[in-house]
Image 1 (cartoon, helix red, strand yellow):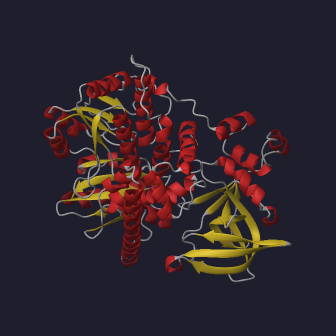
Image 2 (cartoon, rainbow, N blue to C red):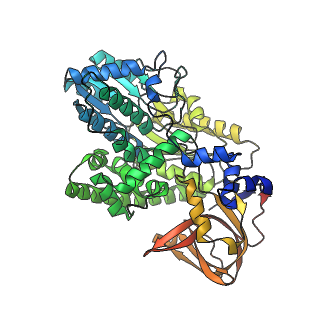
Image 3 (cartoon, rainbow, N blue to C red):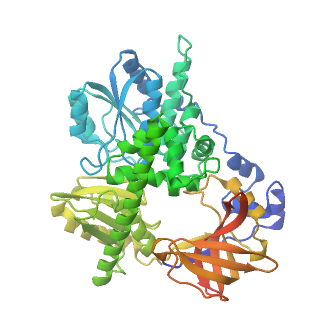
Length: 582
């Protein structure tokens, strides 16, 4: 683990804190740090009302037409045409697929899902699958969470006689596919106000528009399904895909979705909570990110994502529990494969004396495509460098990339497009397919681009500290107040605090392979505080030693008892943290 540079936010003036009289001083400081510089802006953020509901009907542009999209889908339903919802194999894609299929079925559509197999077909649209779907009498294919860069595949689909509607949220390529309609808020001529929805957010807005327009049709009859019935899927997919939760629309959708999740009406969600140890009624965004989503993702990583899809769609509790247990087993295996691959690459880097390289570029025939993204993410976290991890095939290889804020990996891949079969993604997470003969040239070019971009930069991760707290002021009330920031996640992380000179009463390692650090910290005249540091067992302080710690503050619930608990972000011997004031 690389220690971080602590960047402490300056304390707000007392008069500014006082203006936030409806919130605790600690919460007020966090809100001010995040740019909510008036109590009214803070209130709107915390309440997170969905002011965008229904506005998807204004999604218009030269290539982005909600009117054309809705008209074609409704015609397909009226004419009993076969519709296929074509999704992706990750949690965002699976939830998007389930959401849109459920919606279309409620409207009487003849619809089936199609999620490609990661190993056999790879990410996104593929022409062979489209040909088979047409042979199976499909007339309309609606993509979810994919397709915006599938120029050739969409052209092939057109030639087969398919109508294609592409709904996606990924970045736009140099050329747009010639689909019947494109629904992506990132399109230049799209007037929709939120361009950072997850794939499931885009699918939800389309489903919402379909349900609304159906309910106001001539016969006045609506579907028994309502948009609220879909929000549990929206929350899972949005959090899983790291959609920014500082955006009010994403925040509102996830907040409403957590309410739906905690009701656990969907049998598959209820079963998934059971096998992952998540308690209905107390589900937060962190539970999605660390418990529910990894198990949904495990299906597409190691087997078929259709197992996860079936789990979300089943109405049979017995079937749901069987499927959830299958996902649990796949997730355990996924964890084992990820650890083994990470250790193999680390050993190779040490042997090649390449630990200081600005780019980690590794591949192996034994790597499974479903875990390369996870391994890349772990390596980027461990070494704070961009990482490319490939599953090497006989003729071509598939890779996942993860990066750091200083380096846009998708932009770098755009500059290597002549060497790639396909590629796409976001600034800090991407993927590509490459012919094996081009791998050496690709590695050299990416290494050069990385070296140029990172030249002269001090590559040390930072921990943004919201406030310094005396350990004696940490209590349950403070932790409960901070829960108003939920849902926390990407771009709205849990606030991080720091405490200096905390005295360690007990330190030990816990978890599989003793990789986690567990501390008990002294507080004069008060019960000790528990702290847990995940994958932080590289340094274990001695009892009686004092430490500086950066941490998030959470509430631990055990047998109807609530206590404050610290989750360590970083730890130094006392006085060694080197705090910088922003």
